[in-house]
Length: 339
Figure 1 (cartoon, rainbow, N blue to C red):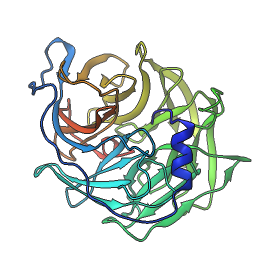
Figure 2: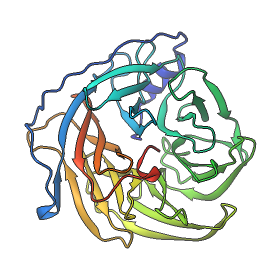
Figure 3: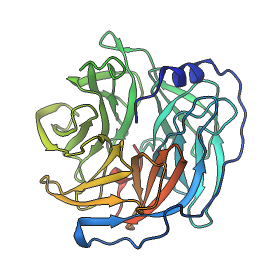
């Protein structure tokens, strides 16, 4: 999730009514379509459709958290959507249509994932330090976790579930002040107990289990690095090390997804592209937009079709919020589906 302006947070915090609207379905490619290729370490993404426009109330649109539901629909969140605009959107990628699933007058939702324990859709509210859940098709909003963790309120950014439904959260606390107060937090599946796994981080953002659930990858936005936490059977940390240093230039590390072969897809804030690494840290490819695509600044996250290789990437900027597709290096699994 990118840094949000104080004005955007103010607008999000003051809205108080509930109203659902439709969303744009423009499908023209502003940069022209280019076939996805692996040659030259470049994968060319293709535009699927435009989902949102820049909101006049917040001055932004920011798509995040793509995740496929059991019905095949792709769920996307718009972090900066104001009152009266969809904050959770369902996309039919085959028909290139979308509809509003949820909105409210408060949340700034930065990620989405379905729980393997109860099947509900979980959302992290960055602005208010909460995690909430919805019924799979929308509605029935419930609070899952709020309040302080070890004496400090969270700014939950991305989320990942283990096999049992316990939740792992990247807490980007300290981001707005440029401090290294960030944490990775584990919340038990009942929402009653939160444990800090690692602290003193530089705005942790992406978080994902590896393909075998043996450990957890997480990225730090303001350090451009990806670290690895080895976990025991109870979810405790047994070791930690810096695994990958991302050469992003002006771009910074955003969300992370992992495919069936254990490859990491690292979203970039500040460049509409995604870096792909193998589990040993070798840079395999860069997913890029067509050269003529303008007004798109960040590729935040990706969902790879479960059991397939078609990937859908959320891309945002002054031109609006878009969905792009490309061919992933391996099949999609839970770790490449939301978070």
